[in-house]
Image 1: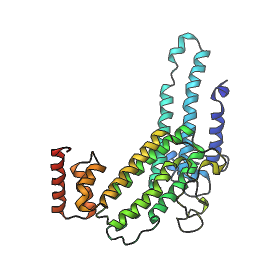
Image 2: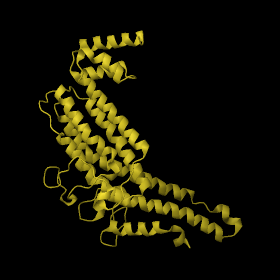
Image 3: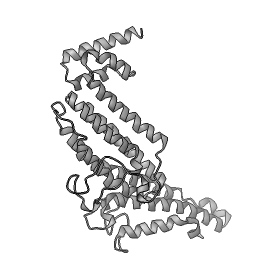
Length: 328
C-alpha cells in the first residue's frame, strides 16, 4: 500500500504538523493557522506554540516537503503499476517532486537567514568596539557571549527536528556564512592595537571549538526566558557540550567540515599574529606565515597596525622586491 511505501517518515511528518499547529488542529505548518505560507509563519507573533519559532516552522516545512517529494515519486510508480500499459508514459510526477524539493531548499535558506539575523547584533557589537584603543584583556569579549547564546538558542531546535543529513548541511551553511563575516569584520577594522590582537585571539579560542563542535552545541540553560546573555542563569559559557549530555550519541562532524572551520580559523589567527608582529620584522614574517599572500594583503595588515601611508608603501615595496628576488 501507499502507506507502507511511505514508511515511518509519513508518521513523523504528521506528528510535526500537529506540533506546528500547537493546538492539535486548524492551520498548517506553512502558515501556522491562516498565514501567507512558510515565510509569513516564521515571522509570527509570540504565542507559546512551536509555530512562533521561525527555525521550527522551517524545519517542519522541510520535513513535510521531503516526505511529500518521496511520496509523490512513490505514488507515480504505484499508479504506473495499476494502469494499462498504454497510459504509463503519461504518468509523470517529476514537476511535483521538483516543486517540493524547492520548498526544502527554501526552508534551509530560511533557517540559515534566521540564524544569521540572530548573530548580526553580536557582529555589530564587535564592529562598534574601538579595537585601536583597547587597554585591557578579558577571557572573552561580550560579543562572543552573544554569539554563543544565539547559537545555543537556535541550533538545538534544528538538531531535534531535522534528519542527520539535512542538519549536517545546515551546520555547513552556518559556518560558511559566519566565519568569512568574522574575518571581514576584523580586517575592516580601522585599527587593531597590540592589546586588541591578544583579545581577538582569545575570542577566537572561544569561537573555534564552538564551531568545530557546532552539531553538538547544547541549549541555553533556560530558553524560555528569551533574555540576553548576562540577564540571568542562562548566561552561556564557552564550552560546548556533546550529545551525550542529552542522553543521545554525539554527532561526529565530517572531516570536510572540520577542515573548513580549521582553515578559516587559522587564517584569522595568522592575520592577528601578523598585526602583532613588530614592524621591522613584518615583511619577513608575512612571507613565512602567508606564503600566498599578496601586496594588498600586506597593506591590509599594515593598515590594521595603524602604520602611516608612506610606511605602508615602503613595506609593500620591500615585499615586492623580495618576491622578485625569489628564495635565497
